[in-house]
Image 1 (cartoon, one colour):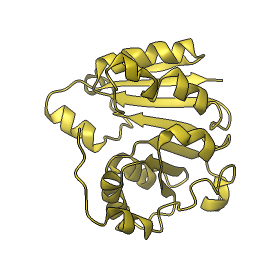
Image 2 (cartoon, helix red, strand yellow):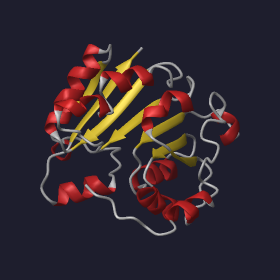
Image 3 (cartoon, one colour):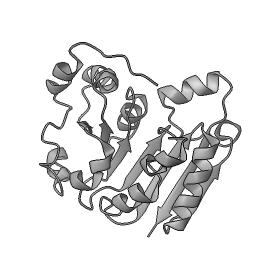
Image 4 (cartoon, helix red, strand yellow):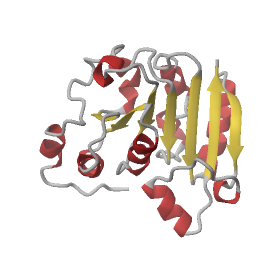
Length: 210
């Protein structure tokens, strides 16, 4: 999918107090940024921010960080959060491939929502549940490793189940049709709402590694 360029997005994002401008400067010290000892939950690929902002609103005792590499996408999340004035959420504008250079054993939970499936086999290493990324995640989790993913792509979901299992994760929860199962506690992303309205199936899994 080709992203539409939004004029001035980079500059507007840079001015936001919700953007962590020193991308690597807080590594190992993110609790100092939040000024508390609450758990830190991370979302890779925040899109327009609906999920992370709602989570921050509903869970004031949890700190949230979202990573997004595209200015034209992140600007929408920044615009929304500017209206909320929340104190438990920040964004990072960076490529997720550098995740292990940004955090050091301080994340309590990771969310992967509707990630790019990278369907071609030669691009498999770019999938956020590939062994390449799962190895990087070992360096960001504080203790128990908890990954929650949602996707509309069945092949990516099947790949992720296998990849997680082969890399030491236990499949804690699984739904092959989220909206036919128990939706309690579910917070939808903007993509999720769009897919559900179009009649698409949503897959959800929680992977845990001690």
